[in-house]
View 1: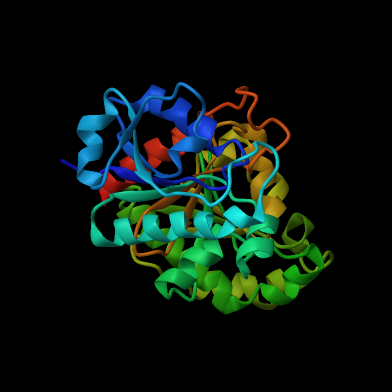
View 2: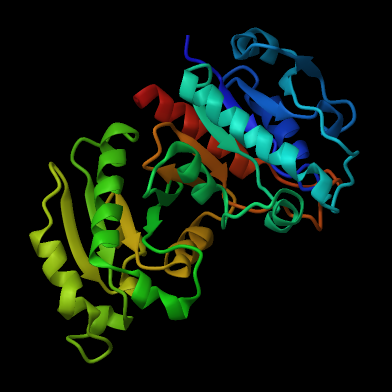
Length: 321
């Protein structure tokens, strides 16, 4: 029997607790997971099964949400993150990493965090989950993939201003991004011969140097020389023609050059079902592709769809791996 998935609670003032309860209700029989956090933060009436060992999650999940209890220092107020709870939010992530690294959990799924609260209350010095997980595991380079049934897309640069993208986008970075993506498509998505399409940086992929020269200067030569076993790499393609249905049928993943070039198409195509996947870690990590949604937290109207898809994808990747 495969080990359960570990779900770190994220910021309890957001929608994490309520979508965790809703996801358990949907997945209790088919995708067992354990919640790392404070059971007191879950919606009133949520059936809870306190566990001390992840192995207990399978049996418990049929009738209650398995919870690996983590006592938070102050009560939770939906919509109002408290920096005093920030160290416990970080602790939940670290416990999830420890479980998946030990094999007690098959994958890690992370509920959304509030970065300001983490900075204010825990001195959190990372742009987000992805960079924190890389630091915890000693990985110098990891890759963020956004995945849904309609599209897998990877931004080569992530949370930086658009003005900084040309300087941050280096041949080494693009090469590593492509290689990590190809490896993960083979080993975690069960695609033996991946097809990767690479977007251009500039409009119309530079249009022969008329709209920017990065494509001519180094992107085209890099792609021509790059050989990644059993992988077909094409591009650079104009980004404005890379994401319609006929184009998507020709590749298994697209490499975008910056954050919005990647996230706009997937959120347009499949807003509720997109999943954030971190590639290049020594374990599987997924997350819903949305934030804490503080404006609706505690009102029981948040949809759990993206979290459900994140848990299901984590399970599928673990089975493949």
